[in-house]
Amino acid sequence: MNKQTIFGIAIGTAIGIAVAAAGGALALREKPPEFAEVLEVTPIKSTVEPDYAQVISVIPRRDPNEPEFADVIRVKALKQPGGSREVCRDHVVTRQRPVEDEHRVAGTATGAVLGGLLGHRVGAGKGKDAATVVGAIAGGYAGNRVQNNMQHKDTYETNEQRCSMVRDEDRVTGYEVTYSFDGHQDVVKMDRKPGKTLTMINGQVAQDQRAASRSKTPAQPTEFDVTYSYQGREDSIVLDHDPGEGRKIPVENGAVDFNARSSGRVLVAREEIRGYDVMYSIPGSAEKSLVRLSHEPRVGSRLPLKDGKIDMAFDPSATKNR
Image (cartoon, rainbow, N blue to C red; front, side, top):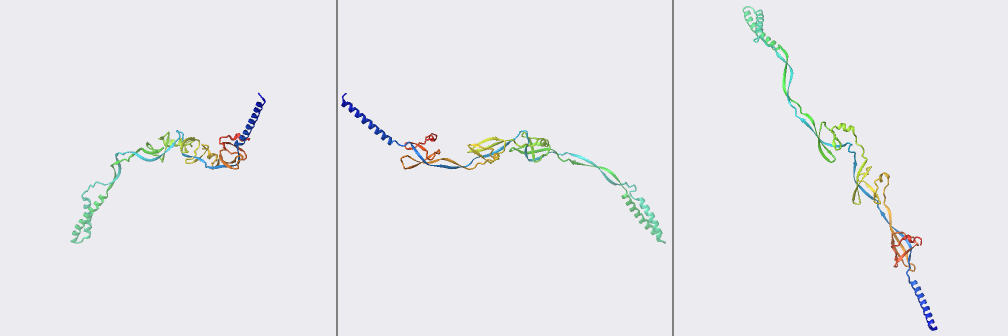
């Protein structure tokens, strides 16, 4: 190889290196920036109202052996018709004694004699006989009437038995009782007339109401079947206390707090940050841009760019120490 050839190769190599270096510098100068600078961060806030569940019903759980009570609606006496019988009683009766001288001859004769004697004494001369006759007639009449009065007053008392038919009163043999229990009506026959309520044991009427009421007293329920509604769905739970039918129960993070009343906790409206409005600028540009992020970057930190825009998929923890 001659000197001219070697010299040409050296010159070409030098020119190639120079061109490559110039192209590399131009490429570096035209490469877009990789990060944007955070200028301002504004939290985006919204008000979150408390969440509640609604208690629909509360049904106490009872011991089946504990007494319950039914309301008496109607009581009808069951009667057996009374029979007829003869009743005899003694009565005191006043009777007139039998008359022996029915025509009152003794009284008439005695009166006539006395009357005649009296007329004979009163009369004088020929009129004595006439006075005696008149006196005898008048005395006989008077004696007759006196004997008649005496005979009517001659009475005595005696006992006589008088009988009559009487009907006994109807006899009450029991009671037909209509009652209401657990939303249903039923009928039961009882020996005694009940009060306003009936004692129920195991869902049945206790025949001996007095003994049932003395032997057992209603106990306070220890468990409650609670039905509640949340977000349009109903659910049930067994609690050891009555939360109150119709009451609103606080819900937090999807969990119903049935102990909120005992703990005294009350939910209130709160502010919640939904995101951040971030003002940033790209190095080499005077323009400012706005982007909404779910995390909070620090003012002065750098955000990665992708195709000239903020890379929304970047991991914030990766740039904390940059």
